[in-house]
Length: 117
Length: 111
Image 1 (cartoon, one colour):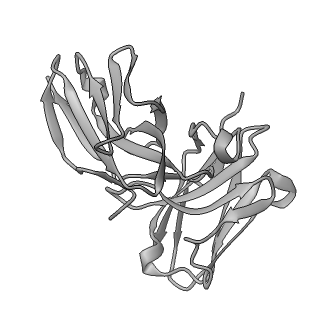
Image 2: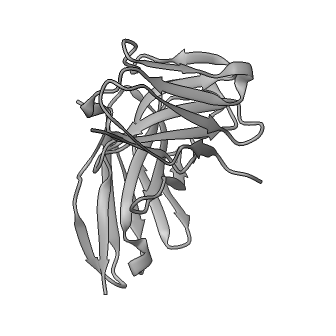
């Protein structure tokens, strides 16, 4: 069974440029998460989807970040324009359950490492 | 107070000894807790989950939950160099499927 697939693995852009990350979760997983991880820190939740609905986007900086999960499967995370402080690893994770049935077992993709110059 | 707090380390333990990792949590998270291991440059992977007060053992790993004191710990027996990694404590937030992480403790097992 394929795991969570993310692309690109690495991206280097200049500040003020746009960037987009793509995530394909494990088949059948209806909860999808986007996390941001800075060096030496734990993952910080940006947005959480249950199927196609964004049920928690309170930590998403909406002035420059946007996300979508069309048809409740693949998801994209976009930053426009990127700032120097956005340099981090963007992790996508999926889970097979929602709400209180969620066991907490998240399956992570390999991440997309963003460097903003 | 952060919902989940960990000592960032690094924690250095000799090979074969017991490594003890600790995590405290706030009232805003539920009683479901998880330990993830993250090797350098890799993604986190779940190694233990615990939902009830007390101990839960899985091979060389034991998770301990103390609800009264609001802490959860992970013990690694017979530590191996391959256990060198960052260990992330995570918790499910209230009644939702929101999973939040601590900042991680870096563990180094010295031969």
